Length: 244
Image (cartoon, rainbow, N blue to C red):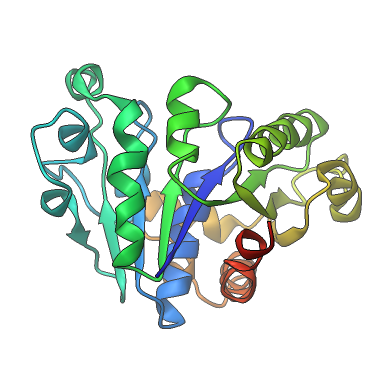
């Protein structure tokens, strides 16, 4: 039985989608069977990052009762990695019922080693439905105090909701001299620091090319950080859920 892991944050733009894509492919490279799910129903970007454009049908169609989940699982170009994409047009957004997300996603853990759920930011209802589709969570934040504080709040709410918080990723570290240091961020977050992903131009280049950096530039600092994250996730996933 696999692991259902929500990728969450308190603010948009922290790099949740980038983290989901790169962690999925890194886990695949390490021999794990992975499903990435784009559960950000209004700002869907995961399929673009992972090289699947104009997929039809999508998760929105499942949530509207117009397709089965088997019809929206797509094989990616990356070894061991499948994807459930979301639609990017407002017509699909209007008809999809986000309350159905947990019912749709949870049974998928029987088919994969890891199901990674790219969630909307914040604590709105659509975000909560996406995050509660998981059983564990990885938080993603940037090294700014407001971002860290908001992401910490998300972690507190998810803990109270029964999810096991594996820890957090400090993304885009080194952009500014005013960045919060990793050890200070960990003290504020009060959950383990899983990885520090540095500010790396290769990550941005890879995004523009529609190829996650672990595939685009595997020797780059950003790619190495995501591979270390994958190794850590394999080591700890399931442990907190078992002891809670």
